[in-house]
Image 1 (cartoon, rainbow, N blue to C red):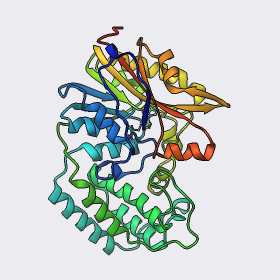
Image 2: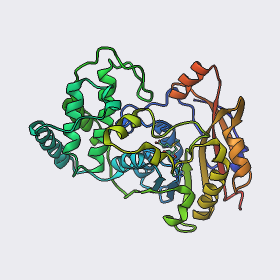
Image 3: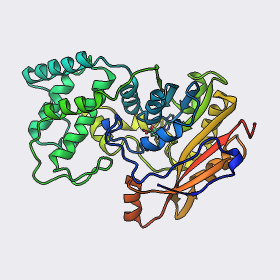
Image 4: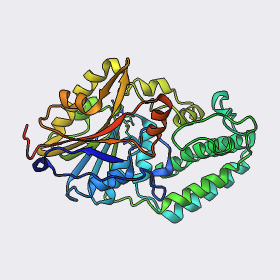
Length: 361
Ligand SMILES: C[S@@+](CC[C@H](N)C(=O)[O-])C[C@H]1O[C@@H](n2cnc3c(N)ncnc32)[C@H](O)[C@@H]1O
C-alpha cells in the first residue's frame, strides 16, 4: 500500500508505512478467510507505536486481527463484534491453548469421527462444494466437535474453507469463492484439519487475556464502561459493501445449519441506515474513551448509486471528534484490488486518526 497524503505533523502520534503486500502467511491470521479482514502487517505496525500498557478496543473486531496483534504487544485488548462466527475465530486466535492436549484432542476426535456410524447428511446447498467423501468426513468431524475449544473450532471452520478450495482444484482465492469444478477432487479432510492445526497453534500466545464480546456496538455501553478505553482501533463495516455472512462463511454457516439472515439483521450493512447506525456507534465508542484517547479507523471508498463516497470524509463529518488527520492509500495485493480490476474502479483506503490529546472534545 502506498501513502499519498499525511495530515499535519504536530497532530501525529502514529505514522503509517507502505507495504508491498498485505499478506502475512506465517501468522495465525490465515486460520480463517474472513471477508474484510484487515492487514495484520499494517495492524502490527500501527499497534507497535501505541503505549504497551494502554487498553485497546476494537468495536468491530471481526476475526480479531487487531486484538491478536495488540495482545502480542502485551496490551489489554477488548473486541466487540455481532457476528458469532467472527467472534469464535477472534476467541480462537486469542484464547490460551495447551498445545499437547490440543494435538491429542484432535487425534482422538478424528478417530472418533472415523468410527461413528452414519453421520448426518450435509445440507444440499453447501454440499455442492465438496466431493461426497470429503463432505462425509466434514459431517463426521462436526458430529464430534461439541467439546472443541474456540481454537479447534476456528481450525475446523478454516479447514472447511480449505477443503472447499481443494475440492475445486485450488482455483479460488483465500478471500473469494470461485467456480465449483465440474469434477470435484476427493480430498482428505482429516489431513487438512491436522495440518492446519499444526500450522497455526504455535502462533497462539493467549496472554495477556483478551476479551471478545459478541454484541451490537450500537449498544456498546452494555459491555464497556464509560471512559475505560485508551485507544480505539478498528476497521468498521463499509456501506452496503460486504456480507460478513457470505463467501466462505456462507458455506460454513449453512453446514452448521445457522440462519444467516438472523446474523445479518444484527449487523450494520445497509447504506440506507448506515449513517444513522454509525452515528450511534461512534457516540457509544466516544463514551467508552478516556479524555486524551486515540481513535484510528481504517475505511474505504465506496460507489453508491453511481457516486463515489470517501469513507474518511463520511466518518469525519459524523464523528463526535474534531480535526482528524487522514492518510489515503491505494489497494494493492488485496481482494479489494481484484474487485477494482473487475469493476474498473480505483478506490482508495483511508486511515483516519483523531488524537484527543491534541484535539480535546
Ligand atoms: C471490516 S469488518 C472487520 C474485520 C476485522 N478487522 C478482521 O480483521 O477480521 C467489520 C465488522 O463489523 C462487524 N459489525 C457490523 N455491524 C456490527 C454491529 N452492529 N456491532 C458489532 N459488530 C458489527 C461485522 O460483523 C464485521 O466483522
